[in-house]
Amino acid sequence: MDARTLARLARVDPSLLSPISHRSQKLYPDLAKLRARDLLVRSRTKLINAVRGIVKTTGARLPSCSTPAFAKKMLDQLPKELKESSNPLFETISDLTQQIATYDKQLEIIAKNEYPEATKLRQVPAVATITALQFVLTIEDLERFTKSRQVGSFLGLQPRQSQSGDRAPQLGISKAGDSGLRRILVQCAHYIVGCFGKACDGGGASV
Image (tube, rainbow, N blue to C red; front, top):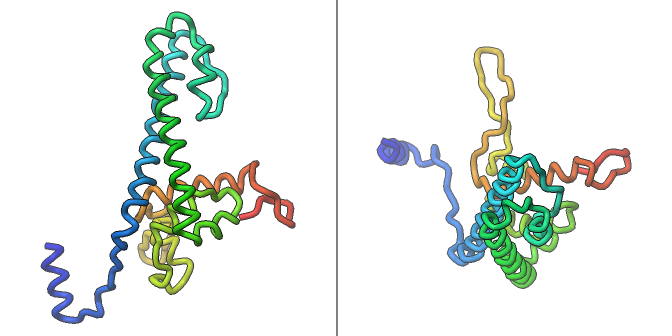
């Protein structure tokens, strides 16, 4: 039905349709590395949360720790009765951490040698290589957008509207577009406006 509707619109007036831009084929290998890394990170997070949940069932609790150091520091903090059964989980978390570090090195080289735009984006506080590279590869051609505000709509960061009569209240963001880039941009925004962001001249966090 969608194809039939588009064909009828094209026959009547092609200007009713908006052109689309296909992503360049040369970008796909680098995008694949970003997505593979993201999958490893999310898998590691689920495993770490699972370990913490298992420990809580015994009445104990693991202390706070950075994610990359979790496998090394938390193994000795486990209750004795859980060490044997949890060893495979810690080995998997350690392997994932090493694989993520390998991806980080590869993506750092790719961003430096092939995408100079990513270096400029890293001047923004809280924006590191992964975020900058994900943005460059997802947006690709800035000429597609006539206004900078359109980028936010393209990534699903534009508030939805529900018009009824004279009322047009703003709802939550539309969440259209690339979910991976939208997620890390929101994380960067939280970092900037949170307690870790650098203060601007007005005394608040810089945006």
